[in-house]
Image (cartoon, rainbow, N blue to C red; front, side):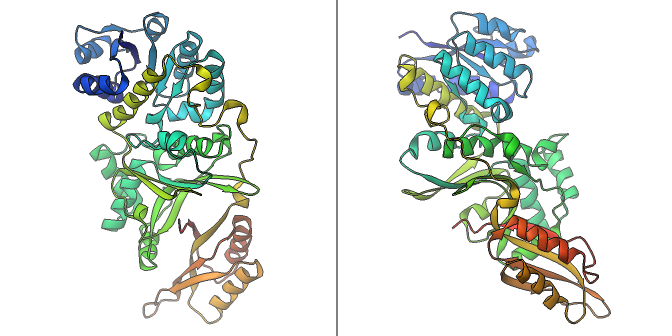
Amino acid sequence: MKPIQVGLLGIGTVGSGTFHVLQRNQQEIRRRAGRGIEVTMVADLDVERARSIVGDGVRVVGDAREVIANPDIDIVVELIGGYGVAKTLVLEAIAAGKHVVTANKALLAVHGSEIFAAAHAKGVTVAFEAAVAGGIPIIKALREGLTANRIEWIAGIINGTTNFILSEMREKGLDFSVVLKEAQRLGYAEADPTFDIEGVDAAHKATLMSALAFGIPVQFDKAHIEGITKLQALDIRYAEQLGYRIKLLGITKRREEGIELRVHPTLIPAKRLIANVEGAMNAVVVQGDAVGTTLYYGKGAGSEPTASAVIADLVDITRLATADPDHRVPSLAFQPDALADTPILPISQVQTSFYLRLQVADEAGVLAEITGILADNGISIDAVLQRESAEGEKQTDLIILTHETQEGRLRAAEAKMQALPTVLAPIVSLRKEELA
């Protein structure tokens, strides 16, 4: 059969990896796909650089619309990134009857509903395995491998930059600002790392997994997002003493009253496999009612790991190129007319347990007063750790782990505790998940 012809929009780190892996493994890929897959056209603003990567056998242009307009191109791979021109080009490719593969989690998290609806109406596929967790096939697992399951919850380390920073903070006892500079020096963090360290990148990915798991529209604007910039090495040490490690998790859970969708630093029992994922690696835990707990681990970024996911999508589309559009696997796992209107819960209604660190006056009655406030708000205590004061010190750290409670109750209790004259500094509160 005639090879599937692919046009790349952008040939940076992922684009060049996609081109090289396709070339290197073309025989194996052809055996899996049933026909050849060839990059025949590339669009990049730096035409000369792009030509130096792909050589003379591929047409290189500076205008992405030339790729979209080419009737010989079967699949457009969008690797530009961002919300702006990428959205326009993806919608134009769909309108031209092209299948689309993208690694752009930000675009799909914010505009996915519009893009998937357009693709469905046109009878083409939008595939996005590379948009979440790089080379880990978590999208395919949720769309196909776990189809028999009612997914109960997902929790993932889905940003390598923040996981590298937290791993270094724990191992070396360094503060966030110091490790961030080291991460930038080593290339793990961008010059402007805001999307990573503030949790936005992880929230984009969690939003997509939530839609796939629960059959709901993509709703990034409903996600609760907290980053790691305020996390202190002191709290990482206290967590260790209590048998926990702190990770930035993307979490989505099914509740009777709605769906939780949140990203924040989280205490996890050190004995959990995901708690031992270190460096820039990613991992996702999925809990299904039939399969139980499954764990997906691997590289969440990088040229060839992400290219692996892009090419997997190319192979899938190639296999389905002649299939009736109504019988393809839906982009969001559930049939478009079967998406549920289950609401995303506000953070105040989330149910979880907490780690609290209070700097308090070292005097009699303080602990009783604090535990009384928690009890008055219906919050039970799981464990208490009090640092021994050095001689002459008049203050100490009080660490409290709570049992599961509603976030709104905890915040009300926190406000009352903060108002006590014996509480000497802002209270640190972190959420805790047992993931059992």
